Image (cartoon, rainbow, N blue to C red; front, side, top):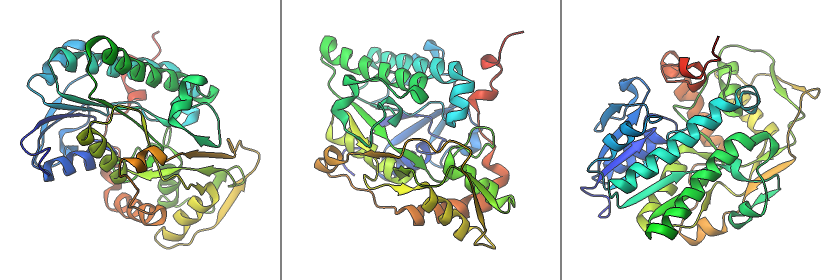
Amino acid sequence: MVFYSGKKILVTGGTGLIGRPLVEMLIEKGAKVTVVSLDDPTRAPKGSTFVNADLREFLNCMEVCKGQDIVFQLAGVKGSPQMTSKRPASFFVPTIQFSINMMEAARRNNVERFLFASSVGVYSPAEVFFEDDVWKTFPSPNDRFAGWAKRMGELQAEAYRLEYGWDKISIVRPANVYGSYDNFDPENAMVIPSLIRRAIEGEKPLTVWGDGSPVRDFIHARDCARGMIMMVEKGVSEPVNLGSGTGVTIRQVAEMVAKHTPGGPIDLVWDSSKPAGDAKRLMDMTRAASHGFTCEVGIEEGIKETIEWYVNNRNDAGNRYIAFNDPLMKKQA
């Protein structure tokens, strides 16, 4: 509580999936929080100051960093693997711009501490992801655009440490994050929000790609936000995974959604003609645990809560900025 009290903190992407709970927690700790986003201002948490700014433009980044003590750089592009393959530039370019611009603007404004939200996409395919293995390999071909863009942000942090001695840049690599305020857009939502949306909208039976056997690591947005706050407060500068470390099968996830959908359980159909993805992808959580982090929100509890939120907020769930719909990212005639 003491560390953050009275601190001026900037949270980019503070209206989003991880940003909202992060901002709410910081405000509870007594911080003076400014949120920067391209979303509608109504999505900003109460008690925060909202600024609408495009962080692809460096001058905007310089302006919002003025007078800030700490910056949490969460602004990014989130979408399904299918969207990654269709719109790689829409992932790669803004992701690079956000990280390069915000970290440099924070440095020039003498910001004390900085958090860079990296991604599970930086990893090469493996059953278990260990932090120190990243630079021995290349990102998965499925994640190579977003993965390399996030890697450049991590490399930028290392360059600043070596040249400027700025060793208070925390890097976290979240697993598959889910929760309230997720992206439920039917064109580019990830697996949990996609299943929830289709289930609530009445798709019966609910069709799921593959056979449900792949194991994935999911982390609730509140746990992810808590881990970020912890790493910044402790001044952790080595990359840290944020996940469950245990994993759950896609079949279990789909069954939880089917079970907790109002009027459920609903029937599931598995489309084995569609790709299922890698058999297993888990985060090694040894390093995070050494810093005192463990998840508190169980996967079923989190899915049930997310369904309830979507049922009550479905009309507003789409009231958000979608990078893929930005006119600047459209193919030029």
